[in-house]
Image (cartoon, rainbow, N blue to C red; front, side, top):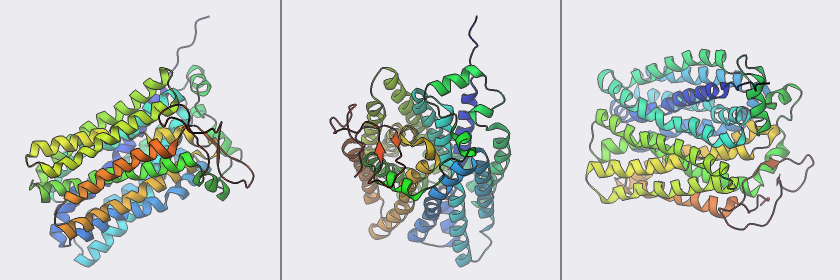
Length: 463
C-alpha cells in the first residue's frame, strides 16, 4: 500500500508566525524612526527620549510571566489574537499625540508605549509554544530562526517606508499606518491558527511525523484536561537551574544589542553621522537585511549540525558564540569616518547578532512540557530587562559624553558577556523535567559534570 504523502501545514503556521513577528517588531521600531523628528517637534532631550524608548520594555518585562501563564491557561490562538489587536490599537493611538501640549504629549507617549509593551508580552512565548507544538526537534532551530529573523525583515522592509512617511507626511502617520495593519492581521490570525490535532488541513501522516519526532502536539489538550498551570514552585525550579540561568543572562545581553538597533541606531545615523531622516531610514535597512540572512543561516546551520549527528549542545552553541563574536565589530565604527565603513561594520554586527539569536530555539528545546508558555515568558522577562536598561543607559552615556562612542562599546561588551555565559555557565542543553515536590532546585535529565563548553557533556544542574 502506498504511503500517504504528508501535508505541510506546519509551514503555513510558520509563515503566520513570521508575518506576525514582522508586524510586532515594526510596531516596536516606529518610535526609533519617528524619534528624531518627534524629539525636534516636542523639544525634549536625549535622556527623555531614552525613557520613552524604554517605556515599552518596562511593561513588556512585567507582562511576560502573566502572558506565559495566559498562554498555558487559554491556549496560543485566542491569547495571541487579543494581544495583536490590543497592541495595534495602542500603536494607532500614538498617532494622535502630536496635537497635545508638550508635557502631556511626553507623558501620553510614554503610557501608550507602556501599554503596547504589555499587550505584546505573550508574543514570543506564544511563538516558542507554537513552534514546540508544530515542529519536530530537528526542525525547531530553523523554525525558531525564521520567526526570530522577522525582527530584521521588519526593519529592512519598514524602516525605508517609515522614513519616507515621516519625511513626506510627518511622524504621526507612521503609528496610524502600523496600527491599522495590525488590527486587520488579528482577524486573519483567528482564521488561520489552530492546534496541530485540530487543524482542518493537516493529514495523519504530517501529524504522526511531528508527534513521533519530538513535537508537543498534545500541549493544549493537556491544558483542556486540567494542565499544570502556574505554580510558584515551578518558577523557583526554573530560576535555580544553572543551564537556564546562563541562557537568561545570554538573552539579556543579546536583547541589549537588539534594542540598540531598534531604538538608538537611526538616531545615531542622524545625530552622530549627519544623515537625513530619509537617508537614515534606508541605511538602517541594510544591516537589517544581513541580520535577516544571519538569523536564517543560524537556524539552518544549527539544525544541519543536529542532523549530522552532533550534540544538541554543539548545534545550538556554535552559531550563538560565533555570531556574538562577530557582533562586537560595531565598536570599530568609533575609529572610521567613511559612511560606507560605518555601514559595513554595523552590517557585520547585525549579521552576527542574527546568526547568534538562537535563544528561542534553546527555549523550545529546554522548556518543561507542562509549562512551555510560562517558561518562555520567564526567559523573555530576563531578556527584555535589556529593553529597559539599554535605551536609558545609552541616553545617559550620550548626555554625559556628547557622543555615541562609549555607547557602542557598551553594546559590544554585551556580546562578550553573552559568549561567556553560553561557554561557561550554560553547560549541556537539554529539556528540564519538573519535580512535583518542594525539592531543592530544578532538575534536568541525566545531570552530569561539565566537560567541554561546546561538547555534548556539561551540567544543567541547579545553582
